[in-house]
Length: 77
Image (cartoon, rainbow, N blue to C red):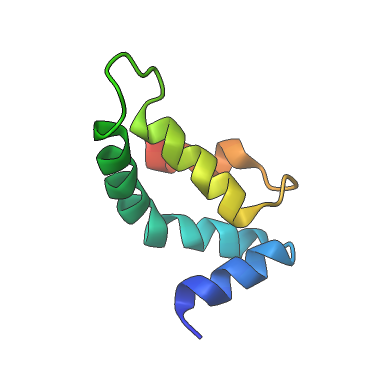
């Protein structure tokens, strides 16, 4: 089992530390995918790649019990 899979499973089970550990492992790759995806969209699209990454990450972790602000703030600086 990969580290990402293990952390996703732990985060889904409510492990807050796992969600925090997962972010640095997947953020850069998700951002690259989002930039590529948004480049293929029609001009005038208002959704930014960073917002798409945040939405994807929330769906990956899928647990609204986390304190998202404290999790994301270090990455957004």
